[in-house]
Length: 428
Image (cartoon, rainbow, N blue to C red):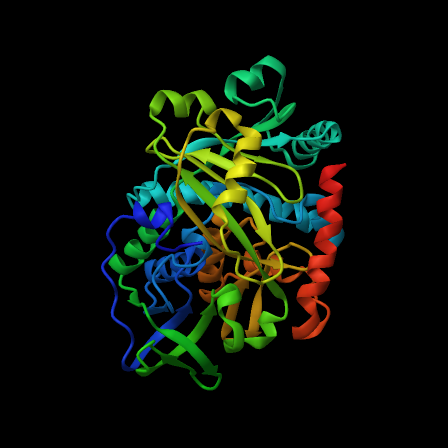
């Protein structure tokens, strides 16, 4: 979601542009993609002493990592029940525990590497419909009983009104373990830490294709047309939907979904605090959900509109503002100062898609809206696997994935039709 209109880009810490790759370089591991996944992989590999080259087609954090709703949550886009059906109860429990570790890892990396990214504790899943109340209570019972997750509290009535100045939500499930932050500054912090540990970073450098052999050879091109090559022992693909023709087999397993966010003008501390008293992040549990939080400089950041069509949306600020006023009508006099959009990658089953294309070529994609915490852990698990301890990484390779139906021509229309069903369900 990062453009000239992005609040995150406007408030990003300085990160000097890395030169594009010219000529040939050699390394132990080449990482493609400069988001949270790629930067975490580069950092964890460099900390282990590997010679790492990271390639980013645009700038570090240019994609979903630097534009997102920035809610740092345990769990997966598919939900735990779906995971149990996909991999069985024992493996699903292991994956849940890893997702909790992923949240802890974010906190640890921030502290260990001194990353200034406005971390705040607390997150609320909000009920919109009466049936949601029961769904949230069921989720709390299941996570406590089946997964030993004890940081959840069900909130409703006057207590919820004290925390959240809206009549839209009758109840919510509050998690003290989750949180939110400035995602672009977090990503830039990971990249800076990777660089300090010896990783070489090349921006404005697209990985066009690669050849597997005794060494893996990656062929690159800059926007200017300048070409280069990286010869490496291992390759880690972290480009999600941006990889495209670089790894067409992977592209068939994921779909890009547009999502949009606005940032209000500064509200002042008192008015911002009155909206969300404890500064938690919030999302409702509709299929097409709203999500929002306060920023460190006392704005409201609000996202909600999504596009499955693949078409570029025109003015996204107005419809997103309308959704914001549906939650906080008291902000009718407030101007929108930033509006931006971007793409996240989803899989058919909304579970993450990790694995190997060849023994030396790893990939990490399909975070399905749950990538802020999980992406950092994915990078760490890849470094573990490369170093010879692959058990935790391989847990994720057990998740079965299918191509989106319809081929290149019909896959989007099929998805749009499927989403219409869920939009109608949200209204019931």
